[in-house]
Amino acid sequence: MKRSQYQFLLALLFLLLGMLIALVLVMPSASAQSQPQVQTDANACGRFRALVTGAEPGDKIRFQLGHDLVKTVEVSEQDTPTQFDSGPFPASDWGFSVRINDKVIFDEIVTVKACVRTLEVQSFDCEHVTVFGTGWEPTEATVEIAIPPAEGGESRADLLAIKQVQPNAEKVITTTLDWDPKPGQYAAVVLIDNIQQDPQSAGFEIKSCTTAQLPFTGGANTRFWLMLAGLFLTMGVALLLFWKINPRSPSA
Image 1 (cartoon, rainbow, N blue to C red):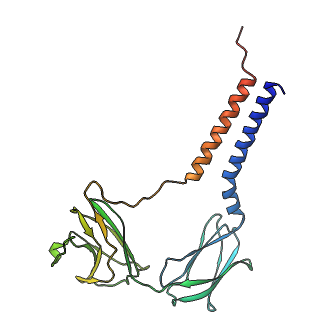
Image 2: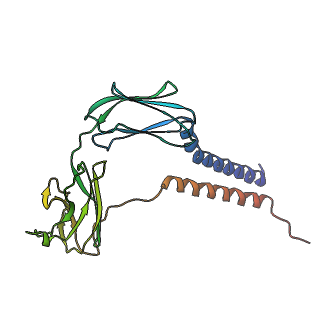
Image 3: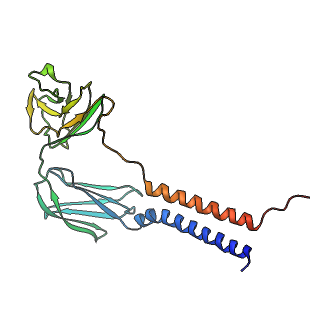
């Protein structure tokens, strides 16, 4: 086999590899659109939610939770997710089904969770602390999120940070507090009418104002960018090989 033929076949191979990578990049979105998908919310407490994507305009979606709660929705716009929200619902295991035009696309046992109070510190540094909690009933009382000093405190004046919040209809509280901490172990607490409630958050540590232990958030879609880089690399190698096979003749 001549060298030029070998280079041509190698270039063709790289072109086919590049096309395969491009096809893999496109396939997830195409397959996702071909079949309606049902996503359920496992985090909501005292209620159940589901989201249907990929339905076509004019499709009739029938949701059923348990024996009695039935909801039918007609899709009006393309690429518009259709949401089901049970509203307040008894905590238990329930049968949940989704039909599109009388065809069952989802039929499983789902769990409606009881509203148990939670409180967690989602992120922190030497200037801000972000706190998130679930299961906190809306109330007309004064609800506040606070951070006591690491060495303990006896009065409201000792608190390092405090901010009033209002539980929403989903029984969620969240806020970001400003503070200026010293090294030590801390935890966030909830006060209702100035009385500390259970639970408090898990403890977190400030070692110094330059080494606060921040949670790692990760990057974007690493797989997508790696495959895109591979596509450009293989296409570039293919073009280089073609150029070596058929270099431009110098002008006379």
